[in-house]
Every structure is written in structure tokens, then in C-alpha cells.
Image 1: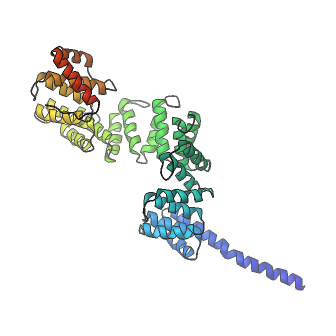
Image 2: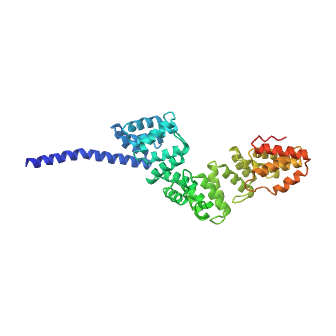
Length: 422
């Protein structure tokens, strides 16, 4: 009877010891759940007491809350590092990874890629997928370690095998491009799809680009449209402009200028100069919107502020053609020059015509020929109108000595010397 009593007492004692631990673990999970749901204030209320009691995982999560900030929790990189250090001192992989992030990007501490790499290595050795991804990324970029696409592949694969969306994405890109080993387009597509299905916009865009251009897969504009749409709806600007292009050209869907303009506008708001240029073009042509040269000018000038060469060209065209303003060849030439200095071939050809005909400048056949030749050298997409014929016509105006001078001038520009015009 006594033995039975002892056994019962012993069992109750063990149960009493276990219950608080189970309850505490559940509370940490509740705090993390609140964190993931974006309820940072409640998450901090749940996690901070546990962190103060020494729970390493809670300490890491509190540090992450201060790192992100928001929803009533002030962003504080100093507090984030302090809590991450407490967690890392217990060799917690989450805390080690958080310190790695802080040292890598210099948030709350001085940037130190080597120290970051060391913390990521300790966390990755425990199978922490985010640290494995970071090691892959640092190897890919050569941060804190020697650059190695092969090592990047290896670490990305470890993260990808745990379902890490970024690891799947970057491994897919390396496999697609054949970096760090042989190209493997089929596996790349599988990895990118797995990442895309987790909602990663980068992967969704990449799948859209592959389908749009027939890289690694059969060309399918309809598939491209759907992948671009998923990324675009997350605010991914490159997908937004490419989606606009598909609607503008009627690829994979019916041609629809209004939808094209809608997506160009979203990308333009996100600061994409090419999308701002496209907005200007649609206003200039009256496609999808009412024709409005003043509005076109506004969009072109926004893109020009980013140094977009095509924007300079299009502003020049408005001035040359007198669209929405009196024709002003001199002002047009000024804008063409700005574009030409950035290697824009159509602007170089425009200036060549101006110098050949003496439009707003003193006629100069040597400069005209050199500009036309340089325009042809920079014309990668066949955008120039009868360039060889124009060059030949300009050459007929040159004496043999002038022809040599023109060739030398063109060669100097094409070798990267500054475009200096009379």
C-alpha cells in the first residue's frame, strides 16, 4: 500500500513539473502566431514575459518584433540586437540568425559581413533554413566570404529542401542560368513554381518571364500573363509593366489599351522609368486615354529625372513636332543631345540629321556622319530608319580627308569618350 502511495505521489509530482513547461511552450506558440498575423502588440504581451524569464525562442521573437516595428511596437534595432544576443548566448538558431542579419546590414551594430557569415554558419549548422539561405546569398554575392556560385547552390538547396521560398527561387535562377554548375531548366522551373505557389512575387515574375520569352519552357504568352498578374497584384513593378506590355500588344489576351495603361500607371507610380515613358506614349498617341500632349510631357519628364534616355528622346520629339507647344528645334536638339550622351541611337540619328541639314545648329557634315555611324553602332534592336542609306548620303558630302576625320570621331565616341558636339 505504501509503495502504491509513493508511486501516486511521484506521478503527481512529475505531472506538476511538466504542465508549466507545456503551457509555456503553448504561450510561445501563441505569441508567434500573433506575430505572424500582424498583431505585434499582443505578440509582445505574450512573448516579453517569457523572454525576461530566459526563454531563448521568446527572446529571439521579441528581438524580431523590435526589428520590424509597427502595430504599437516601436522599431528599435538596438533592442532587437540586445534580445537577439540573449537568445544567441543560448545557441538558439533563431537568435544566431537574427544577429547575422543585424551584422550583415548594419542595423543596431556596425556592419560586419564576416561576423554575419559566422553567425549564419552557426545557425545553419542547426538546420535553420533562413540562415542556410543567407549563406547561399552571401556566397553568391561574395559578402563575408569568397564568391562561389557552386557554394551558393549548395546552401540554397539545403534551404529549398526545407520549403524555404527564397531558397527555392535563388536556386532555381542559378540552375536556369547554369551558374555554379550545369544548367537544369526543368528543375529550375519546378523550384520556381514551388516558390511561386508560396506567393513569392520574384518567382512568379520569373515564371512569367520564362513563359513570355520561351526560356526553359515552351513560349506561352497566356501563361506569362497569369504569372505576371499574380506578381503584379502584389505590387511587383517589373511584372506590372510587362503585364501592361502584353495587353498593349495583345499577346496571350485580347489587345486592350485601357488595361495596358492601368498596369503601366501602377508601375509608373512605383518609380519605373520605362513605365513612365509608356504612360507618356499612350497620352501622346491617345491609346487607352484621351490624347493629351501636356500629360505626355509630364510623364516623359518624370522618367527623364531618372536619366531614362528614351524619355529625353520623346521630349525632343514633342518639341520638334510642335505637339502641345510651338515647334522649337533648338529645344528639341537640347533634349536629343541629352539622350545621345546616354547612347540612345534614335537621338544620335536625329542629331546627325540636324547637323547634316543645319537645323538649329551650324551645318557640320563631319559631325553628322560621325553621329549617324555611332547611332548605327548602338542600334541593337533595329530601330533606325534606313540607317545605311542615310550614312551613305552623308558620306557623299565629305571629302576624303573629312571622311577620315569623321571615322576617327565616331570611333572615339564608340570607345567611350565623351560626346562633345560643336
